[in-house]
Amino acid sequence: MAKKGARDIALDVLNRVEEHKSYSNLELRGVLDRAQLSAADTGLVTELVYGTIQRKLTLDHVLSHFVGNKKLQMWVRNLLRLSLYQIRFLDRIPERAAVHEAVEMAKRRGHQGIASMVNGVLRNVLRQPDVWERLPKGDRAAQISVAHSHPEWLVREWLKVYGEEATIAICEANNRTPHSSIRSNSLKTTVSELLDKLAQEEAVAQPSALSPQAIVVAGGHVAGSRLFREGFFTIQDESSMLVAPALAAKPGMRVLDACAAPGGKTTHIAELMENRGQIIASDLHPHKRELIAQTAKRLGITIIEPITSDALDLPDRGLGTFDRILLDAPCSGFGVIRRKPDLKWNKTPEDVRAIAQLQYELLKALAPMLAPEGVLVYSTCTIEPKENQEIVQRFVKEHPEFVLDDTLGQDLPDAVRNQVDESGACVQILPQHFDSDGFFIARLKRKG
Ligand SMILES: C[S@@+](CC[C@H](N)C(=O)[O-])C[C@H]1O[C@@H](n2cnc3c(N)ncnc32)[C@H](O)[C@@H]1O
Figure 1 (cartoon, rainbow, N blue to C red):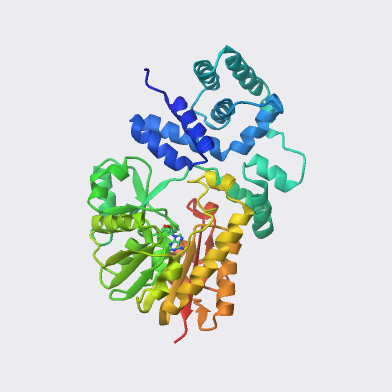
Figure 2 (cartoon, protein in one colour):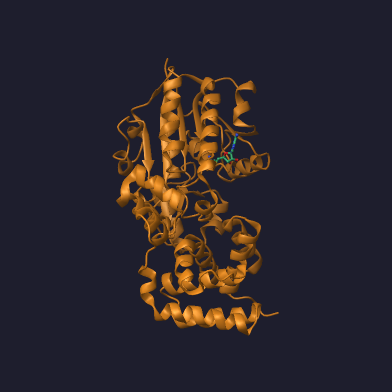
């Protein structure tokens, strides 16, 4: 059988995601591992899958002008979406090539009738380029939702909280391709040494404008590199790298990371503690324990003790008290839509309410485990106030032994300091601020 091309593979992934209601990153990883494509084709498949899912609502709106209410088979709709995505959003693919490929795929997977329909629809779109500017009737939320391909309920929420300009900026940032960044392992190297080493391996890398430990990498296969295997760095988003410094853990301290897997922040904390002290790294899922252990080993860290536990049960495990606690809570993930576009289509307002309830319960459960004068950092990768500011505000109201620590800015890089809110203890990074993940960090202190 002939080897499948990038577009065919991308269509397979889109179909599987829809059919199995699975996550595109997992489907993509599985398919790419098996397909053994060139680096260029791997990049193209990834871009086609994520891009088509990101822009689904815009693509469907344009399609609706040409197919109306006609019932299309799932794969045919996905083929049309994939092709429209290339036509509209991928400059490097000539429009005629996108149409030709689509027609050939329709013939291979279906029959001549479907191929003719696909050809007709795509050529009609090409003939009427102004169709992309036609917005739906309705209010601004409905229009922004379609123009920037985000669910209307989410756009309505953001309009209330952030206003129109910032909401559009959030949506636009979510639709951009994320860049990759790595965190230099301070136990083994420095940022400038690592930059030199990366240059020798022909990776295109530069220091981050956001975090002093971060390097932004544009080229080279860093995850498979010798430097990675030998523990010189961790792959992590720049916003995530702000959390461990915010905890201000010192060498020799006892630290609890209550939702630790896969270990990105736990290992960062250990590096900042110069691998001295103790970190209990707990997570709910047993299989993730090994993941944390392996990452720590690769980085040369010995102070992390991974355990499996529901964080709600940790107070009953006889672990004693801690100088620092990190609750990097499970969340809706609306700050990482760039990387996981399915999130915006799958999550509902009810999911947000349910996860906010869990987040509050987790924070409440961990509170007694913090030593007097201890510091607790609450963080999420979402931009939803119900999961962020509202949680910590309610928490300090109901726990008078805690205060918001108004010195958070001291432990954040210069670039982020002016984003700290008026309490001095919370920072909400939006994806457009630094073209990094949307992230929330709050620092609480237990009174003496
Ligand atoms: C945001 S992720 C943590 C990421 C991690 N801190 C890092 O930097 O690599 C949230 C984690 O919470 C875990 N989790 C979810 N519910 C939990 C619970 N009730 N108790 C403990 N862990 C939980 C999930 O398995 C997930 O690994």
